[in-house]
Length: 311
Ligand code: ATP
Image 1 (spheres, rainbow, N blue to C red):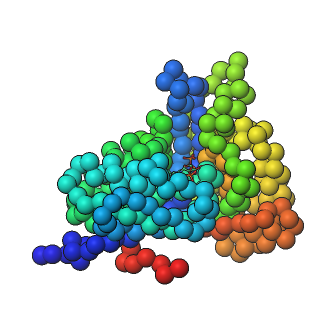
Image 2: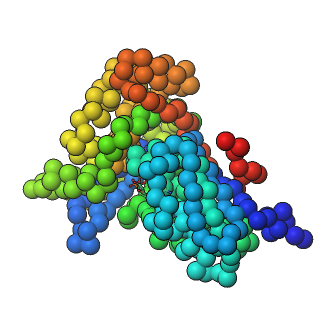
Image 3: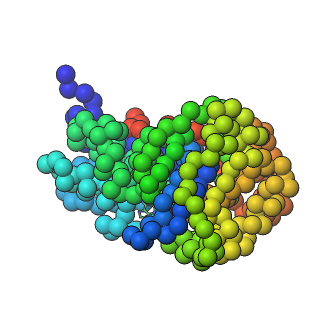
């Protein structure tokens, strides 16, 4: 039987952003990478990607921070499509990305675009790989891409690309504060981490029992108390306003406040939906934040949706 997708000339998929509930960073390795141990949660801020059969490869970007995203072959979505195409005789595609995730914010928007592109191309080209078949390609594209294929709450190890789901209860209300366009680059933050940890013994990172217990319990208060990020001191050192946002949010009743990944976005855990609205209003009304994004986590990973949004 021929499915709708087999005859389609365009397929749309969406993929969520992520927050790192815990980010443990080991010492700098001889290969230039750091061993990571992270607990990811997929959150409901979505990138939407449409892939359409075309005469040549291309990508266009709209939505939040679109002007900051490259449209050449360094675009992660285009790289994802071209890498997948190496495994099959397929037609080129034009990719249209609608962004809601801040660019270079530590929420992995580019990786979400790549994950959405992989599932959309898998459907468009009728490759039948599914998420597990796409995993090796996702891992080649970047450490966050495999997690964003699957979503939920998971432990990431290695460089972040080895993903194992964890038992997590509950639904959490997040408020994200994207900080100014003078974003932090991931290499800069790691360099500051290396400087701060020079001369100290940096242990091999591993998921903390306290985090696993909080996730099993499923209470936001418990999770808020154990959020941690080894890169936070480095990010705050490079951009002190991050520390100001964290202090303000805690004074307004956030259950926990953490730099998301390598920053500069700050992730705030609120006590339920009303708590998130109150926190968002307090932050913007007081001038502590110019802009906030509310989202629930965990959510599912990259998946095909019926049609692109109209705007
Ligand atoms: P990471 O923590 O992995 O560095 P991030 O969440 O901080 O990621 P992203 O928005 O994923 O930031 O993008 C980081 C950089 O990657 C951007 O500055 C941009 O130049 C480049 N990039 C390539 N493709 C994309 C894409 N499709 N969307 C956004 N950025 C992209």
